[in-house]
Image (cartoon, rainbow over all chains, first blue to last red; front, side, top):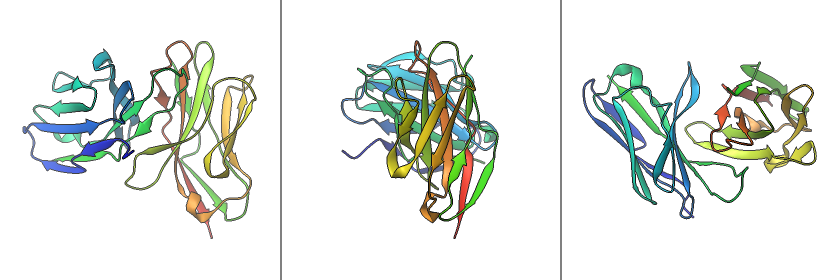
Length: 115
Length: 114
């Protein structure tokens, strides 16, 4: 298995632009998570899905952020409009259902820089 | 609310010496505890977990961790450090009732000195 795939790996954009980050989870995994990592705040959970349905989006910082999972093999995280404080590394992770303590598998991340 | 504390920003250890990376947690109910490692420009990789059973759990690359309920700790250990162990280590906790939502610590940078 190729693992969790994220694209792009790096994104540089200007303030006010729309940014879309993409994720393909591991096949057969039922849960998908979006995290943001910064030096100041560490790793923060933004939102997670179960069977393509958003379960908890309490970590989404504000209305500028939105996430979708149209099918089991694809999810997007969109920021519109982007701001410099959104600069961070964004990780997608997936895990299997069926085991209460199943670990998460992380993608390589997207490094976002908003100028 | 659940939380994780990793009291050391960085741990330095000489190659061949034992290493310990500390973690304490706070959670209601029974904890699920995890350790992950992150190498530069990579995503987090799972090392080991405690769910139930033996307090000493063994994981990948020779790492182990000991669950201590009375001290609410889950320290990561390795008997003999390798230079290739140098990385960022994250402790994480979930509640056995809401186990999907995992809270990560801020991370501890491990530097193994040749």
